[in-house]
Amino acid sequence: MNFDDAPPSDEPRTADHYQHPDCVEVVYAVAEGRVLTLREYDSPEAFERAVADARYLGIHEGVEALPGPEAFADEGNGRDHEDEEGATDDRTDEVDSHDENDDPA
Image 1: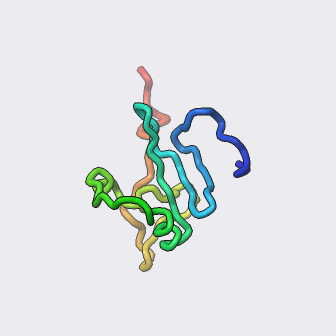
Image 2 (image 1 turned 135 degrees about the vertical axis):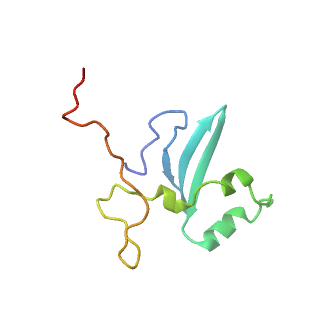
Image 3 (image 1 turned 90 degrees about the horizontal axis):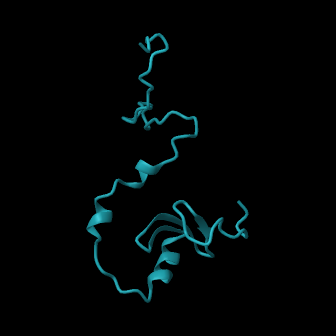
């Protein structure tokens, strides 16, 4: 997608992806007239500039309970997921339980 392109619709949709001058923003969810987004800043300094005039509200318990960023890593890159010692991690591939030899009757 060309970053100069307009979004595909007038309404925000889940996974809409935007490039700002100092960060990337992705729409995570749209519900009940509200839009939840995720932002990734180029640096801690860019983040500090962006929140400089914001009021800190503490830790959001709902977000704190979410899995870490590793849970959202791109697993479709065709590479095995290995740790530094070469052992594979505990992620498993989805397996189709249908056997070609199963009788449908």
